[in-house]
Each structure stands twice: as C-alpha cells, then as structure tokens.
Image (tube, rainbow, N blue to C red):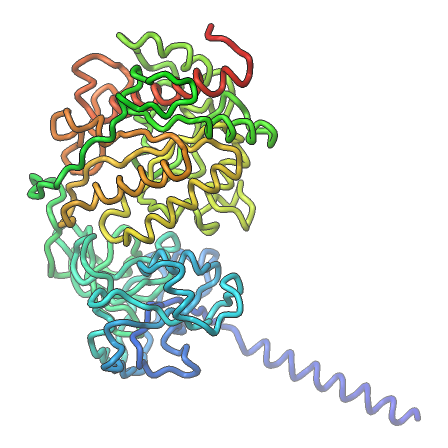
Length: 532
C-alpha cells in the first residue's frame, strides 16, 4: 500500500516537471492577426479557415494592438494558396469568416447586403444571434461588385510584412482604386498584415497586398501603420479630386409641402416652421411614454456623423456664442434646453455618444462602436446615448456616408431600426433629410432616393420630418463647402442674412425651429408650462 502511494506521487511530480519544461520553452508568444475576411469561393483552406489567419512572430510589447515602426517584425514566408472561383457561382457568392464581436446585422451592412439576404444564404444558422468567431458564412454578393471573386491570386512565397491595419481600422475596406466609390475587394481586420506596393502623391491612399491571401488593392492610409518610409514607396495611383466642380446634375424631387402641412394635432398650419412637417399626435404619445420611463423634458440628443459631431453644429449656442438677430422668438427655446445638463454639457454643447465622423447608419446600431468606458457591452451607441442622456427629443441625420456604397434597402432597414429604437425608448425622433452630395462619382439621384426613404419612413411612423435638403436649395453652392459634402460655414450661430447663406448656419437655425415647434406644440401642453 505504501509502495503504491509513493509510486503515484512520483508519477504526479514527473507530469508537473514535463509541463513546466514545455511552458518554459515557449518564450516567443505567437500573435494571430486577422487578414482579409472575405474569401473567394473555392479557396483552398484547412477546415475552411486557414486563409483567415496568419501567424507572425514578434517581440512582445505592452501594446501589441498598435505596433510602431520601431518594432522588429520578422518577415514571414506564406504558403501560396490557390484561389479558383467556382465558375457558376463566382459572381454571386463569397465567404465571410466571423470575427469576435460580429453580429449578423453588422456583417450584412459591411458587405452591402440586407439582413434577410444574409440569413437566407446561411440556413445552417440555428439563430442569427448565435454567431461564433471563425464561423464561415456564405455571402450573396451583388453581381460584379467584388473583384475578389473574379481573380486568381497567387502571392509570392516569402512576402514581407511592411505594414499593419491599425487597431482603430478594423473592417478596413480594400478597394480596386484609390477612390471611396470604387468596388470593394475585401474587408481587413485590425492588425491585418500588409505589404505596401505603392501610394498616391499625398499618401492618402496606399496600394497594398493583403497577406497571406495576396489580394491587391487600395486602402485609406490613415488606418495603416507602416514599417517602411513612404517617401521611398513609388507613386502608383492618383487620388480623386474631392474639391472638383460638381459634374453631376441630379434630378431634384418636388420639395416636401411643409408650408401647407395640415397633419398637426392643433389643427393649425405650422407656417412659422417651413422646413418641419408631420408633427402629429404621435409625438405626444412618444413624449408621454418617455416621461414614464424617466426621460427629461428639457434634454435632447444629437445623432449622426461628422456633420453632427462638428462643433459648428449647435455647440456655439450651448456656450453662449450666438446671436439670433431677427429670430428672437427662438430665445425661449434656447433658454429651455440650456439650463439642464445632458451629460458633459447642456444639450446644445453636449458630446453625443451616437455621433462620429465617418459613421453610416449602421454604426449607431452596432454595440462594437459604442464607448466602452460608458456603455454596456450589449448596447449600441444609440441605445447608450438614450440611456445615459435620457432625452425627450433626438435630432437625427444619418445617410451622407451611406451615399457612396450602401444599398437603398440596407439603408432603409437601418433607418427603420433607428426610428423604432427611438420610439421604444420614449424619444421623439426628428429625422433630417440629408444634404446634397458631390464627392466621387455618385450615381445621379442617390441623395433624392435616400431622402424619399426618410420621408416615407417618417410618414409611416408619424414622426417629424426636418427637411434640411430643401432648406439648402436656395443657397450658394447649395450650402456646401468646397469638398462637396459638408455644410459651409462662416459664423454658424450668428444669424445675419450674409451668414445664412452658409449651410451650417441654416442647419443651426432650422434645428432651433424644429426644437421650438416640438416644445410649443408637444412638451408645453403636456407639462402644463407656459412660454416665459
């Protein structure tokens, strides 16, 4: 009995010693970096996944997610994959490898398909909410839109890693040309290894080979960390001129008949608010719902992209840097919203958790883009903004960045969710039409198509429409700056006749008018307050 005891103890000690030796020999940790996640159908893989990752050995650092040019990165020899699309399906489908934090909605948006199309293409999914990293999904791609499905890629063995996608640049688009409107080849995950092949003159765009797949295309240089001197990289492409004179003459729709709108619960025509319509009793119902949920009557949120996140938008009013001039009747509504702290400032100057430069409609709906320091893991930026700020009203403008590539059905689905979440959380969504757009080779009528979607959705849900597009039409250059995208501005909150020839001043004025209408016709009657 005693002998068996000592034998068992000796065996345990031997096992522990072997494990310690194995662990001590693993001095150089390996880092698995994401590479292009859109894989042409027919690609040879091991278990369907080997082309989705690559292993790079490098000296450990405190911040692996953001390597710098001083890190020594060992050039890695990659096997040469053979990518041979299946002829009868190459133009209509591809593969997507699920990454940590993905949702089916996010994948559908990034790949330009609808949620229903993606779900239908993957009947193996027990539930759209049960995705796991490294799952492989079939993607029904728009015909002719993905060059990755039309080429055979044979990268050279031993290709040297000379750059990475930055930690902030995950899901970076690899395009055929240095043009934001060019067809997409693939999506690149954060820290994806690259080989820099060329650049545009100002290095705004880089021509790269994505490793190990060998896909070659163009990415925006801002989201890439280079381990080479760009001055030594040859110029191989030309950036489109974002400031060129617009060459597109869109077919303009008939302006929405705001001046004759009669669908108001007061029975009055809101002639004082020519760019606001559809203010119905539905807004009263939403406001009362929000009050029961704890929303604050004199707080509003700002939802959108760079045009909303711009400090020229409403911020000057919040910090008392404004002059109403001939619009003194708006002073009471300014006073009403300036007294209450929203989060870090009053509503005019508050930093929104659901407005950021470059955002498309789906960004406000995907938890991955929410502020991790403030928001819960499961919250989208929109839900987080509403929970933290508890507004009664939201000024919403999304769609400008969607113009270049988002399918109209995908955009409509996103805007529908924005409106429904707002209503469900007791927030009156005041939805703005988007301004004209003259950047890149945009298909004529895209802005008008998206604005018609906005108007139709607002009418369906009976929520207010703020027609910013119509307000810009009489202005010089339609109220746009030289980039053909963002509103022009001089002194954006000083409403002199000359300043009101600029797009941002008009946006601030019409935003105040929208807030004033809702305050007078919705909030005051329900709270029993009177105009000071």
